[in-house]
Length: 134
Image (cartoon, rainbow, N blue to C red; front, side, top):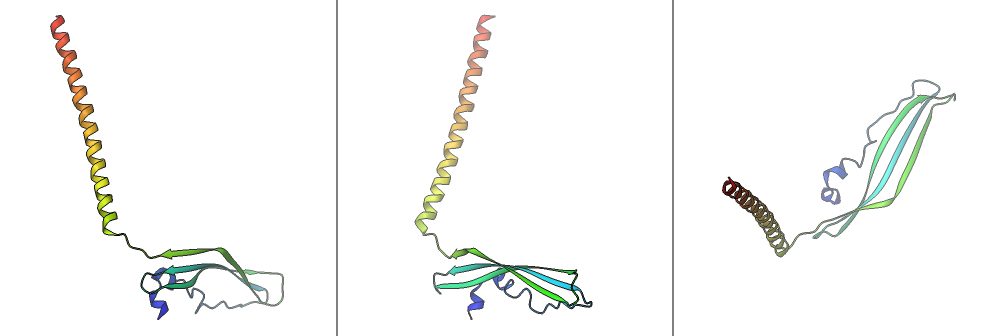
């Protein structure tokens, strides 16, 4: 049941190496698997805390100088932990943000209107002064 609470990105990465076969057809074939593991904690509002691990894997096959087939696993366990927290934004924060956006747009348009008006007035005065001098 806990697996259904995890996001799809996590459940898709839980068993990447499952159902994969690495067959050695020769004597000196080596299979190396590099696995990076990162802890992930999900904090849900209604369910509580759920811990999981995500990992990425990379595999390589090559011929070595040994007579027996070899398989190697290299684990890199990350000391960092990803914490995903579910939260909600109260209505008053949404309303405050909307008023801030509307006020910012109003201010920018007011500044633009002032610049256009003052430029137009200055140009009109200069044109009138040129007309008086002739």
